[in-house]
Amino acid sequence: MDLSRRMPKDFFWGNSVSSMQTEGAWNIDGKGKSVYDVRPATEHTADWHDAIDEYHRYDEDLDLMQSMHMNMYRIQISWSRVVPDGDGDFNQAGIDFYDRLVDGMLKRGITPMICLYHFDMPLALAQKENGFMSRHTVDTFVRFGKKMIEHFADRVKYWITFNEHNLYFTNEVFNISGYDHGDRSLNDLYTIFHHTMLAHAQLDAFVHANYDDVKFGGMIAYTPVYPATSKPNDVFAARQLDQFLNNNLNDAFVHGHYAHEVLTYIKNNDIDYDHQAGDDDIIANMHADFLAFSYYRTTTINADKVPAGTAPNHYLDYGMESNRFLKANKWGWTIDPLGFRNMITDLYNRYEVPVFPIENGIGLEEHWDGQNMIEDDLRIQYHEEHISAMKDAMFLDGAKVLGYLGWGLIDIPSSHADIEKRYGVVYVNRSNHDLKDMQRVPKKSYYWLKSVLAKNGDEL
Image (cartoon, rainbow, N blue to C red):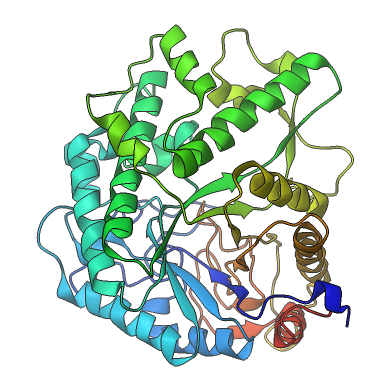
């Protein structure tokens, strides 16, 4: 064992999921409908009604995590499970479920982390308020968040508000914010983003004013963008993307203000983002204890494909190109462990705040024959290379990293409802249109990861 690369004893290894992709139980125990509950199945996707039925099978899944030597599980509290219409009475049966889930983790030595919002707006707020276009929705979310923090803070010490918060500064915002109607304008995009940042800031301030032992962080989806060539326009576009989609949020999380370049763009383009008196003071209260992120891949930008006058928020809609120097999975997601090291190191150098990769993994198409083990060697290689790259960032570059959480290490439907895009080291026996028995079946990668975590990652 190389003692110079020995991992901290308190390092977190674990799994990360959302409620809509795991729980199922969409219409029982008082749960209200979310916007996902009414989305139908298609030829290549499932509906969201059953997921992997963790609502009833969480003990089994927690046992698998404990057996793998995982010591953290990041979950999401479904807003519509605990507040069925988003802003009315709290549903005690919903809260009771999360009590059982959190207590089940602690019983097994697994530290819980809670995310408060992972795209699944209560349907009533989407229809009545147009989701986060409304400041009333901001108020109701803060109310929900404070209640959950008050209830769980004695047992849950790690919190984030919005999953992949920078997606709210891209066109994806209209799919994940409860946006029900409108022209999907740039003004609307910036308005929703600003409203979600106000919500995050208020909960950040609430935690830091009331709980000395609770850690509160911001989270973004990190997809580092390389220039497609060494042409100055490509380099410039890549830098702008980093500023708008990454640094702008982290500047706010850590320093309490949006990036100057973004504010200048807003001013020069007369963007109406519902900025009101007092908003800057709310944003200024932000103080991240850690910077969390997802990382799956990198990409490139070809500026020649971006129409003149396009907002930086939309560059990738036109100019994204896959990196010809990297291998990719079936869905075109490139495999770039050095990119993982580079962004961890850059993030810590820039902000000097502990960083926390809380999603990392690779989607593969896999089918179980009912008998033989799934030999997912590419997944083993992916995680081995990314964990090793993270250790390089820590031990060679000096980055402070709190842990490493894989995404969906027990198979769950992808964010676009496709269970056939599998990230897990444990296979769940269902397809998009056939629930089968949902049996949990460890893959080859399960036993590999179990052996790695048994030694705290020291022998990689």
